[in-house]
Image (cartoon, rainbow, N blue to C red; front, side, top):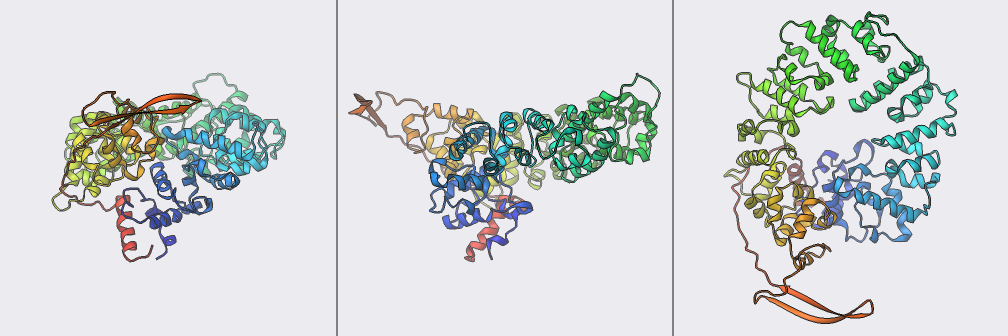
Length: 615
């Protein structure tokens, strides 16, 4: 079986833990297999990418940049890129997703551009078409001055960006309005112009939209909103664009405040128009022209198209008017984004008895929930006799919303339900809540039928922020290859108690990443607690540790020698301390594996291939 036939979803299970027993050549082949484009692209996160690079960094073909996924190139040690090959490196890097960098490693993105400037001879903020073409996706993170001063082909690169900052968007708008691009002078713009700008209209201001008549904007919205929904563009972005278009229309349409409906009664036909509620640019008109009965009968269609907060609050008020008592369950399921603008008191009037209703209200596509609102919704569901936080409920609630609940509620979650649920991201929970969830998860995954501590680690990984020190210490000899993102999310007090050898055992093949993360507060604090001589033994140039004591027990040996530094003879003292680190051997009680854990599925699948010598 060729690795090229593996599905992208299987390859997405790659982790340093899952490949810990593989040979170097097998790992390299897996990394190469992840080089895919378009719909088949293997989407990988930072911890996977750094792991891949750590495994291939010493390979002889490391500078054959077209063999490896572009995202892996983001984490290359640039000092190993031959100067004669730097252009080839940046040409391949241009296809990478530069947004994958975590906040701890964004400095690498800055360094990459500095190196690109040197390689490509970039001496100013005026980039040529050739330089822009080589930089590729890196253009998405250039500041506004580059957009303003560079070749207009910059706009074509920016169309593919996942997001633009306000300053970048303002620069794009300024370039367009100058009229020196292929889009021509603003006086010639039509709805065809708007369509050809691809995603850029998402970020434009009302001043930009002032260049279009209202009928043009209406036709464009009918087309563009369909495209945005198909491409799953966030409601927040759509909301912002609609607000700017609405603002542009209001500049030209000044109305006196009136209480009666003058634009036209809102009914099913009006709502079915893709541009709805564009014609109701005055929120008072929207309020006057929309009846409670219309909201009751067309709630789903309304909440799919109305995005602005003040409009959605009117929808909620009309819905309350439509029902004398509680809002029925079938209507609550259709609230969509409107639910984000309700109050905790309003939730008390909603019928929430079914898990489908809970799932609809928790749907992240509608935006994040305020913790107090999430707590009110979940509590309302749990108040129904027989309802509990089962695995289906946990999957619907997800980690972030779970953290809004009181700790006593979390302690009542059964180990069976944790075991049957998908991995939950509970990293934003308080330390106390994380400890409660870890204890339950540990009971769920450690059984008498399996003693594989690595398997237990994989299943417990989402909950390790609440793990006690003795469990973390026990992992240091288990070859788990903990990634640095997991490491920095451990209980900080326990991290600071770990020795250099224990941390080395924990992170394993990810050891080099300690250097990359050295400015993370948790890592930096740990470094300052260690003896510099112990840190030096890691061989990754970590600095900032404690100086060795000048006098010590009989196990300490000091030697003095003369060296020449900056033309001067300097007396230097080297202190060697022999330390004995106690080794604790623990026997895990075993685990029942969860079938949909990506890393484990990957491990089993690839193990079969290796055993049959297919890779």
